[in-house]
Amino acid sequence: MATTEQVEIKGKVEGRAAEVLTPDALGFLARMQREFGGRRHELLRKREERQALLDAGEMPQFLTSTAGVRDAEWTVAKAPKDLQDRRVEITGPTDRKMLINALNSGARVFMADFEDANSPTWSNLVEGQVNLIDAIERRIDFTSPEGKDYRLNEKVATLLVRPRGWHLDERHVEVDGKPMSGSLFDFGLYFFHNARRLLGKGSGPYFYLAKLESHLEARLWNDVFNFAQDELDIPTGTIRATVLIETILAAFEMEEILYELRDHSSGLNAGRWDYIFSIIKKFRNRPEFVLPDRAQVTMTVPFMRHYTELLVKTCHLRGAHAMGGMAAFIPSRRDAEVNRVALARVKEDKEREAGDGFDGTWVAHPDLVPTAMEAFDRVLGTRPNQIERLRPDVTVLSERLTDVGVPGGTITENGLRMNVSVGIQYIESWLRGVGAAAINNLMEDVATAEISRSQIWQWVRHSARLQEGPTVNADLVREIADEEMSKLHGGRFAEAREVFEEVALSEEFHPFLTLVAQERIDSAT
Image (cartoon, rainbow, N blue to C red):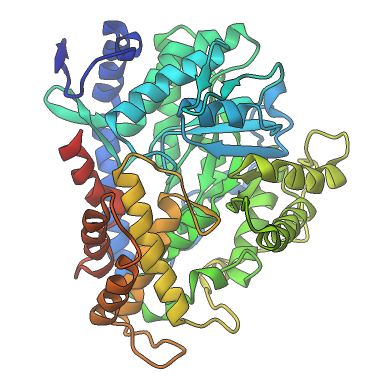
C-alpha cells in the first residue's frame, strides 16, 4: 500500500508497476478524478432515473431537445492518416503474448482492451499499461513456457485502447478516500505515459469508448479529453475516440454522440453483443421484449438490421467511420468441418457488412483476419473507406429499433443449457484473471456472458416456456446447472456458480455481473 498526496494505492506496487504509478502520473489521475468524479456519479444516477421510466412503460424516442443538432450541417474532424483505413480490426486483452500476436495479425487496427475482454485484477491493469508502453517503444517480447519467442513484425497494426465503462470503479486506487473511476484510471495512465510517445512516432492517443447510454456521457468524455490535453499541453483534437453503440438508448442518440465528440471523434461501432444485452436489461420487466435463444438473435433479424443500417447512415452523414461487429469464432485445431462451416458464416457476415456500407469490422482471432480482409477488399479496393456512401435509402423510425420480434424465434432447452454452461465457465475464467475465454470455439467475454445470464433472468421472470414444453424457473435452471457442473472440475467453478446464480436468479436484476463478481476478485488480490 502506498500513498501520494491523498492518492492511496491499495494494490501492490512491485515489479515494473512503479514505472507507471509514478507520483506525476498519480497526481494527473487525482486531478481528473476531482474534476469529473461528481459529474460521472450524477450521470450514473440519471441512468437509474431513466430505467424507472422504462419500467413504467416509457418507450425510447429520438430526442426533441436535440433536433437542432440532427437538422444542422456539421461533420466530425477528419481522421488522422493512420486511422483512415480501418477495414479489419482485431481486439483482445493487454497481456504480452496477445498484444504481440494482435499487432502482428495483419489487421489494420488492434484494440487493446481494459474492458470486456479483461478481468480487472490489479496485475492485469498495471501490467497491461507496462505492456502497452513496451509495444509503443517496440521493445516488447515474450517467450512461452515451451520456448517459443514472440516479437513484433516490422509492420504492425495501429493501436487503440478501450478503457472501462463509466459504471466501474478502480477500487485499488482511492482519491481523497474514495475509489476512483475505472474509466479515468485506464484512460489517464495510458494518455499520461504515451500521448507524446505516440505523437513522436507519427500516431496519436486513440481510444474506444464503451457502454455509453447518452450524449451527455459522451460530453463528459469530451471534457475529459480537453482537460487531459490541456494538462499535458497537447493540442485539442489530438485524441481520437470511436464510440461503441452497444446500448439501446445510445442508438437513439448516435448523431448527438458524434456531435459532442466532433473534434475528437473517429466514428461509431456496432457493438452487437452488448446491444442485445442492453435490450434485455432495459426492458427486462416487460414481457413483449422476451428474446429467443441467443443463437437466434442474429445480425439479420429486423431490429438488428435497422440498428446497423442507421449507424452506417449516421456516421457517413457526419464524415465518420462506421465499424461493424465482432466475429467471435475461434478456429479449431482438430475439427476441419467446424472451421469450414464457421468460416463460411464469418465470410457471409463480413460481406453483408461491407455491402451495407461499413468501413471496417472486428475479429477476435488472427486466423479470421484474411476472411474479413477479403470481404472488405472486394468492396473497398484501394479506397481506405467508403464514408462517401451516404445511404439515403435508409429510414429508421424509433419503433423499428424497439420492435424486437424474431421471426420463428424459439426458446429451447439447448439454448437454456448453453446459457447456463457458458455463463458459469466464463465467470470462472474471469475470476482467475482471464477475461477473454475460448468456449465452444467462440471467444466469450463479459458482453456474451451478460447475454447468457440476463436471458435466463428474463425467461424466469416471465415464465417463458421451452419449445420442449417445460416452463423456465429457478429450479429448472439449478437442475441444469447441477448437470453442467458435473462436467467441470478444478478451478473456481463453485464460486463461479454462486456468482452466476446471483446474477441470473436474484429477485432484483443486477445491472452488471462484473459488479457482483468484482467482490470475489477484490478479496483475492
